[in-house]
Length: 460
Image 1 (cartoon, rainbow, N blue to C red):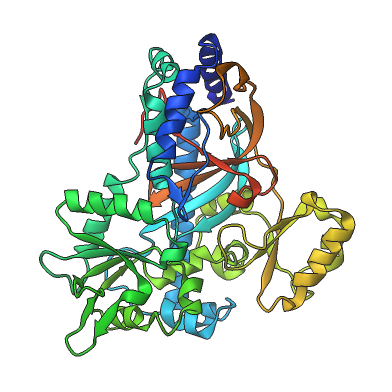
Image 2: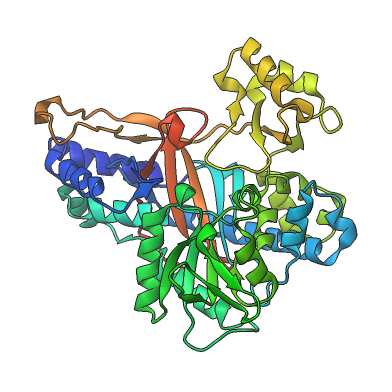
């Protein structure tokens, strides 16, 4: 059994002995209110109680992230190299063409985040989803750690423990630069750009990364995909101010590219011509699309995996099937609602995600019928529902700065956990700790973020 709950109780006991450490909580809250931890221009909700992880948890998370990364790369490589394997995936034809655009650098999956439900008592569990393009949360962890570090609770806890945080900026920036250095059309003194559709972007996080790239000696712009201009004759991609771009960190998810197909053509053309390095490439969609949870069980995939990787898939990847009569018994899904969760194959932000445990039998049957057999106009999946691990924290207290101290709650609540495990080109980078009160952990369902601290750990 890990020491995580013991560490959390120790943190809470220190806080309680400080009469709730209201001053520390208020200062942390005030910091976050003016911080760069914005999600779609809204201040991220957060808790004063960090996720405190021990060495055993660190080792397990590192193994999970790095093993998942290896499995993903094998699936991606087989897709790129084997036309018959490609036919097993249900993709838009435009998407197939994007995926097959050559990368021209030495990294198949530069950046990923693997969201997992981890029972911290047994270190067993299963994945929620895997993400490549569009993965975020790094800046929230950075800002949250800054917000709590000046509190008396943190200070007293730290007198008994060695406390470390993950640097989710410098290692990735340095890895990005290394990847660009392998690009076959690299230039001296390149300019980089972080690119997305700004209405969907975590813009403040992008700006923080741009500063880190600058500190490493590389100018970095933050750009909307639709503002890019490509001169095919000169083979130059520029922003609307005329600044040349040599490499892109693609934060725009592929379905947003498809939904803005014509406006995305300048970037796509530049990538196709090799005029710019797209890090990561459109092949990252193979990881982002939830079909991969079915693909890892196919005989064609299992023949590529080691015995350890097969066992990893069997133990950690939930059953995932298309929600149609061809792939699963829909009556079984209807009858056993608490065992299932329904998701679109390719979305983000928990849009159109339905956990059977949150609905009455009548509601669930209506949901199944609404999305089964392509009725919604796009394919949906049904997946084994995994019960999240619950931990203690202080709930969101939005009026913290205006309430009288006596009126501020000291009571903890139990929240569900979904840690996201970052992988920088195959190396474990750290964790994005999201928690929520409901079976689905997402912003519309009242989720929040906690700082991640490694307690008495040797990090590799």
